[in-house]
Image (cartoon, rainbow over all chains, first blue to last red; front, side):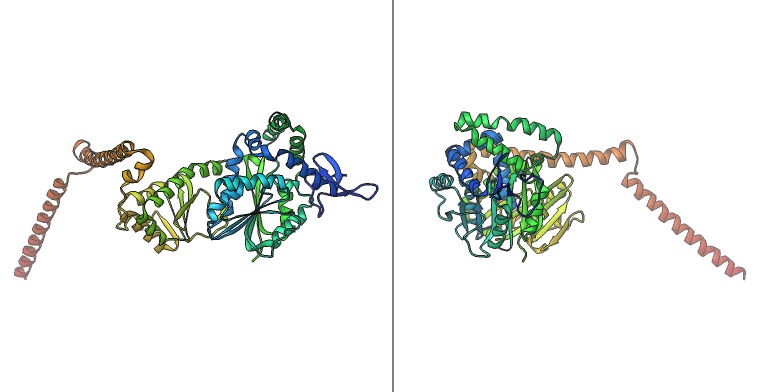
Length: 266
Length: 209
């Protein structure tokens, strides 16, 4: 039995097969839990070099607006410390860097070394490496001290994490009291017509993936993983269960994406 | 979607403001007094929100309200959009701030200080914009703005006089001030006569007694 997108179980991403091996979803496919991380890693190694171009193509450029809005919600100020988790090619880190300034710090963190390499190179090319640190980390076990960050942003990354509850709990731990988590992720459109149009449109993504990156399977995984991701209310509940408070979300483009926000209690 | 587009619309204004601050150290110095301050401007007709965050010599603009961002502004001013705009266009005697249609909450002194600072800057906009737009365009723009402002003032004055004349002379909806003065004078005369008559009547009654 695979996890449905509306489930809010404490281990939303795993189930047991008849031989007691835990499985989880990799798109629509059931895979052993231990294998998911490797499979996701292969996807992102494959797409890393063309990741940003594909973002522009499949979102028709709207991802830039959505990211701008997310940065607004971060309410970052000079001197703040921010963790750009699953930050990959560094889009958000490059936006955060001038805001937090020389007295602040941005940590670009991702589990995938290929994405981080692209991100690191982009940051160096832009001359922004003064206040950006790059780190390869596992979101489920963040290697940072408690109460480290004013803000943690995970953009289009949570759905790739095997154990989302563990990741949310880890984020809560490393947040400063009063600090905020922002989770930007694909979600469920509110309007049925939009939902249908989106379904049809997303069927083109694997085709675009094949044409631009030569990798159709990775973009098929993208589409499937979006379908398997918890909806807005379920993710909200997961954040509250992880110990975050004052949680809310903003639907973007009718819920095609959603930005969830939660705070660590003071 | 409105929030996305609002954010996008403010971006060039924010960039321009920050470029101007970088280009004019005098203005940047004046602004540094307000470092780490957050001011929220909420227009109610039409409904528009603007958060101004000042930090490290830079200005950050956001169309989101403080509730959405979950932050506490240092000061908040709200009112009709035209009343708020008048704050920018009316030079700083502070009377525009005393408009009862505006609501100020939080650090009212901060709002006053910013208001007076903006009006005391005496910015030469064409010099500031010239590096970006070129001399000809920026001076032309400044001249166009000045001429438009002058035209608007003259038109407003002419309109006031025209309406005044129309009401009083043409339609005679209200009496002319001279007519009112004449009437008042007649009333005074009548009052005096009544007083004199009363005095004479009293004298006559006294003599009969």
